[in-house]
Length: 326
Image (cartoon, rainbow, N blue to C red; front, side, top):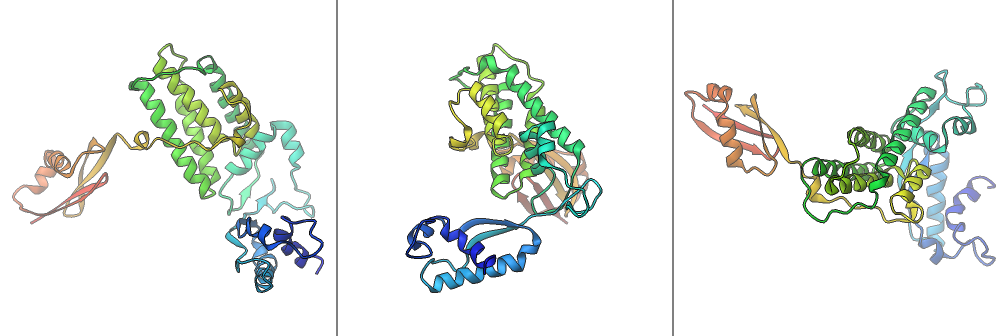
């Protein structure tokens, strides 16, 4: 009673701690129920989750809550293995104190490494070397922002082309991907995409071209948002240099521009009777007629169609075109 009942009452009591006449006010609890995500180790699938759901059903029958299932999504977190390969635990003496890592690399790098080490539902192997790699990555982000800080107020109202357009496309494409990754709790891939964006932006030097300066400013600002869940202190510090008055945690999450996310080019596999005979690259918005014309113009495709009659054409936009010939 002192463990399970108290623990599983908490998700209702938390909203109404000082209620002396009832376990909690059902109206107040309803604001936050059901809980969006429950995170726990695999051992929680019996004791914790079993009783959690049982007490939710009891409270539903008592009229204290309306949801039979107290949470909408379960994430069974993986196990962190120590440097010796065994599950971290006091009995093995292989626990890595977080304070030591924070002192050496900083809180942001430590957090980023834990999120980057693997999917939340997979076991991870602790590695000081990988933590050091995340620290170096965040330093690169800082240097990138510092290099372009003089153009933080840059504004360009006209069209974007060339390098400026490439930067904007990369930034918005990364934002769209990171947003999706975070929503599905794939934090390691979200960080990896940020790393790819930094790799693309780093070689670009500060420019007097207002279009490129504006594009780089926008890219750095979006990068701050994307890193804020993992490296909030660094993101807020850079954000302050790029026009944000307070913490990014209080800002609305940015939206990507769909027009910038659409690929400019698409590569089609050209098949003859189901076997790939060539590849052709065209504008992403090319229609079937244009793709067919380009495919039929290929020498290898012509050779495999020679003397045959095309009975059917299978077209999958931005992926393939298949000639069924006899």
